[in-house]
Length: 97
Image (tube, rainbow, N blue to C red; front, side):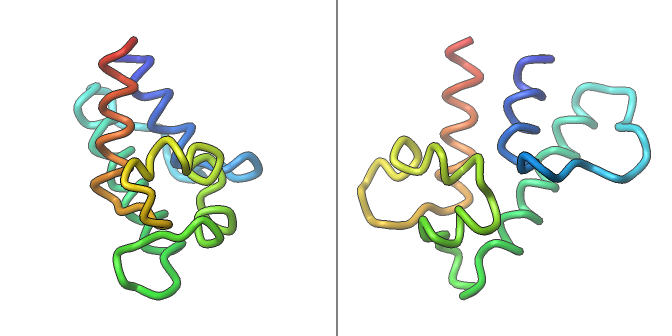
């Protein structure tokens, strides 16, 4: 469970930014929920066109960890990734550990 949280946080938090809020909730499910909410917020902020599709440039500007794994996440080679694709990628990485 700790590895799953670490993976989520790596994708959510860029190299220079970190969560500035209070300590995470005590329960693991609460931590995962908070991480997912942060992921959704980061995606929405990075998606400047508000079309639900994050281009490589948008990812580089707003979600550097997603940008560094863009080709792995964009399995359809569409030139963009969606939030469900990012979530699926994270889920697959968690299961592999």
